Image 1 (spheres, helix red, strand yellow):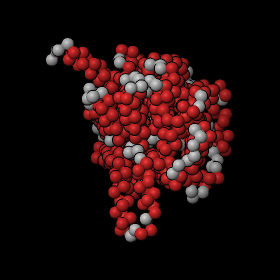
Image 2: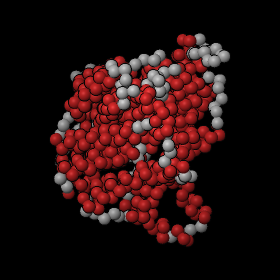
Image 3: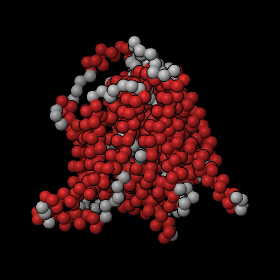
Image 4: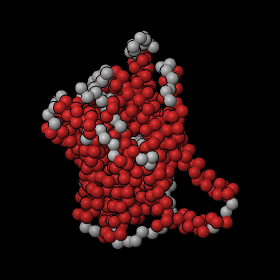
Amino acid sequence: MTEPVIQRRLRYGEFLSAVRVRQRRVSYKDVHADAGSRQTARGLRLIDVHRLLTPYVSVRFFEQLRAVVPLALFLALFQIAALRADVQEGELIAFGMLAVMLGLMLFMDGVKYGLMPFSESIGFNLPNRSTPAVVLGFAFLLGGVATFAEPAIGALRAAGGGVDPLRAPWLHLLLTRYPDRLVFAVAIGVGLAVVVGMLRYFFGWRMKTLVVATLLPCLALTAYAGFDPKLAPIVGLAWDCGAITTGPVTVPLVLALGIGVAAAAGQEDNPLAGFGIVTLASLFPAFAVILVGIGLVGEVPDPALLAPIVGADATVAWWDETPFAELVAALRAIAPLILLLWLVQRFLVGESVKQRNIIAYGVVVAVLGMALFNLGLTVGLIPLGNQAGATVPAAFSAGIGSDPLYPYPIGIGLTLVFAATLGYGATIAEPALNAMGVTVENLTDGAFPKKLLIQAVAIGVALGIAVGVAKIVFHWSILPLLLAGYTVALAGTIWSREEYVALAWDSAGVTTGPVTVPLVLALGLGLGKAVGAAEGFGILAMASLGPIVSVLLVGFWIQRGAQRAARGEV
């Protein structure tokens, strides 16, 4: 491998670690400086501690403030100004939003100091010190265990209340009685996706070939489920699960391992070809969830017979009844991941854990951050999304004892504009997309500018969310939307250059952050319940599909411009 290629891979690796953590990587110089500051901390006055910590904390807090507050304000103002409805329990929701911001700030910092040192060390050392079978086994475990630590995964457990048990009984059963099966299916799907991503590096598979080989079976299984009335309601949930997996834990940890495997394999591809591993983590979970649905339908022929058992089974674990329920849940999610990373670092890589105090600090902060985030999710994000979804139909539909606020065409148009604006604003505010744009602009020497990528992805997400909302409002089946959209994406994939294929498919994962996912999920469930839909899933699926198509189209436009420039045309 030539020196310029090594430098590009290292630069790309730094970006991958920062894509979901949204912070700079800590250097050994920083660690030693932190150690020295601890030694002199006893001599610091309170004002000195304030001056040292305030800039550090404020930068990270304002990152979350910029991502959370605009979305929350937009939802609240739209509800008040356009829908003429007050926000219920505003003080509690404001407290929840504050908990979300503080929780994400702490969680991101904890991932940076407590998890990333393990992952980077293992990623660069394990491929050279173990057999490919061991690397693949670890990749599977890492992808699966990291899924449980994703902040947004908790939104799935709260989604059962928005499903009509009479019109979507098996979906309701999966979300209420068997939510662990759902989460385990997602985890297994992510684990298999990571394994296939590592095999791609080992054997030098083209990303274009891998996308086609993965997408076609997914679409075939989706079509099979979509034509079965029992399984059709599960399709939207299955494809929404792909968006939930690409969060601030899974992405940086998995990609750090992928960079190490790619370096060990000695590949010298175009730097943009390193993108693409996140794509698989979005497709495989959809496949796995549909398989779980098929198994559930075969196991439970008639969910109505289980209704008395479901009511009796709705027990609460002892730890959920304690005042520290969120803390215990966060510990149960993160502890297995930390244990796995430590065991591999100690016994497979063969190195002791360095800077234990820093790592211990990171783990503690990550657990506290997740606990706060889960609390804010319960009392802030989900209620706000549910309220917005429940009040939106008042724009075009008559309620009990009231007329629609606007004529039907205007009300529908206002609803779709609201959905598109929400998607566009959420994407523009996503720090991970901004980091991705900087890297793509550098790696392409300005051929794909950062602003162009951000606008292409934001427009794709906006149109996707608008289509997802229209699916719920008009009671469309999601199957034709998925088949038509992914057929276009598949055609674009076949005719695009390799690097743009990987970039476009990974763009879908970057847009679904830990704030956007539960908020949009709650919005869809609240809207579905208000308009009488059987379920409110599918918005996230469309939001992931939109940017794939839009970025592929922009890639075509850039290729055409380069060809014309090569021919000397204006």
